[in-house]
Image (cartoon, rainbow, N blue to C red):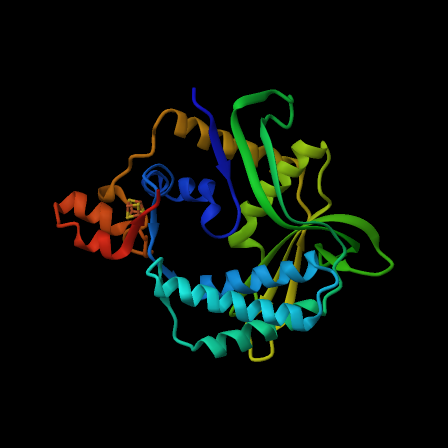
Length: 299
Ligand code: SF4
C-alpha cells in the first residue's frame, strides 16, 4: 500500500473535506492536479487578511506601518501574478480599496490580546486509533493550524446551555483557533466544525491530551470591522468519530473508490463545483474548450 497523506486546513488544502464532498472532485484535484483558474474575491481577500494577521503575531515587534506596508506589497504582488495569467481574479473593487479594507480588518483584529503558543504551525501525525493506540504507518494526517493559544476561560450554564467566555480570572486553557473572515457574523462553528475537530484529533495524538477548547476568531467585514469569537468544548467521543471519518477516507483512497461521475453528482443542482466542466464534458462528450477556460493543470 502506498503512503496516503490526508490534510485539512483552510482554502485549497482540505483534501478530507473534498473527498467527503465528492470522490470525483478529490480525484480531479489531488490525483489529476486540476486547479481552478478563477480566484473569487472572498477567497483572495480572506487569504490577504489571514496572512497579515498572522504576520502581526509572528513578528511581535512589527509596527502597524510594517504590517500595512506588507498588505500593500502582498496585494500588489497578487495583482501582478494575475497579469502574468497565473490565475483569474474576480474583483469588483480597485487595488486601493482592497488595501484600505484589509488594513481596517487587520486593525480590528490587532486589538484582541492573543497569547499564542504556536502560529501557523504545521503538525503531522501517523493515523492512530485514539482508543487502542494502534498506528497505521501508511497514512499521514497533517494540518496547518492557524493559532494554538493560551486563554483564560470560565464556563457557566444558562438555561441548560454551556456558555464559554474569555475571563481574566478564568482557568488557563489550551485553545485551537482558526481565523476566518466573513461578511456576516457566524451563528456557530457549523461549517468549520470538522476542520477544527481534525486539528483537535492531531493535537490529541501528538500530546496524548485533549485541547480544552476549539475556537473561531472571525473578522466580520462590516464598514467598521469587528472580531467575533466562538468557543466550543470538544469531547473525546468526537475525537474518536473524527478518527473514524479519516480512516474511512484513507480506506476509500487505498481502494481507489473515488470515481463517482456527473450522473450521480450530489452537488449538481445546488453548488457551483469548479470541476463541473470536466464531468459535464465526459458525460456529454463536449469539446474541451470550457475546461481550458476554467481549469489549469499543475505540474
Ligand atoms: S461536478 Fe459533481 S461529480 Fe463532478 S466533481 Fe463536481 S461534485 Fe463531483
